[in-house]
Image (cartoon, rainbow, N blue to C red):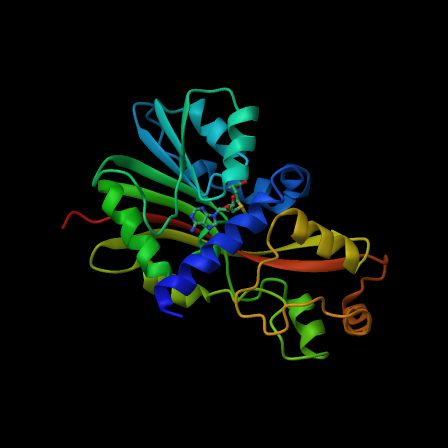
Length: 265
Ligand SMILES: C[S@@+](CC[C@H](N)C(=O)[O-])C[C@H]1O[C@@H](n2cnc3c(N)ncnc32)[C@H](O)[C@@H]1O
């Protein structure tokens, strides 16, 4: 299979996985809400701007952006996410079904891009970044969060003791992200990295939340069937090593937040 074809197939699978989660998404989105709000201090305080919410999902933040800015575009490649967003958000938002690797907008037409927890799904990331920079005006901003290496370390480590298959997506490192955004065309003005530890009643609760978020498509998984009850049980046994004294199961998410400017060249 050609690389382009396998890229397309992969994108369709990710979009379907998010699409099937569109209705349950907002109740499972504890992390998304936190990370999206945490970007607010970086938002420009002029309202005559044109904003692109890249990977807008159910449109929760697109709606918030539309209360502050003149022109807001919500872009997502999942039909179902967009359908849900259109039905539940009532502001004057332009919705676009498109892939972040091929943004159907004119060069230099956007003042800033807001993107909350999306680019960890973008592969190849440099293509998506090139597209973002193409549609941004010179001096325009990318205000984003993503997850980096160290995310779901408890789950990864528990599965590693059971088999060598992929059970969690591969996250880039903080240093890799800095490299992607510090180029001759763009520069990281500020970035933060923090561990957010969410609490779960059990491992099933964690798995359900990941599924509810649509974050369960694994491009490099070898065994595509169910993992098997025995393997699942063995993994949950290893997860006990992380159990806290109050009986809570922790899961760490390493959140990278970035403020990037498109350079004038
Ligand atoms: C974790 S959700 C975040 C949604 C929203 N930004 C929020 O904060 O609630 C990720 C979203 O990105 C979309 N997405 C992932 N990869 C994408 C791509 N290459 N192009 C467009 N949308 C993409 C998914 O369909 C999903 O709706």
